[in-house]
Image (cartoon, rainbow, N blue to C red; front, side):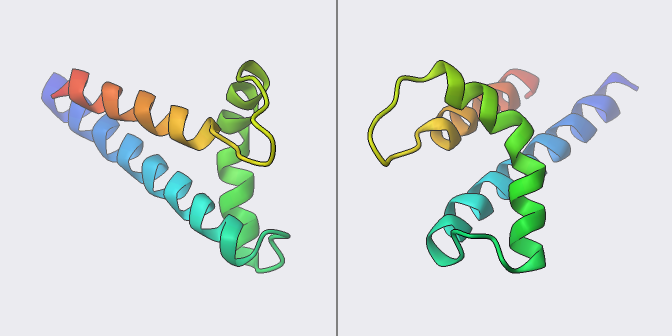
Length: 81
């Protein structure tokens, strides 16, 4: 049973990882999030990225919060393996 829960958690973390990568790509293509899919990706990832963004020091126009969250998610997946 624990193996199934670990696998389910890994799938959920990977799906969120893909959403964050999609947000990074969408921020270059559609930064105002006018498309419904882009708006969904921004709304789905903002609750995780906003607290990280508040903790990190400002680096001009570059947002490092997706990179930090991706590193943490990668560590979580490795810990579950």
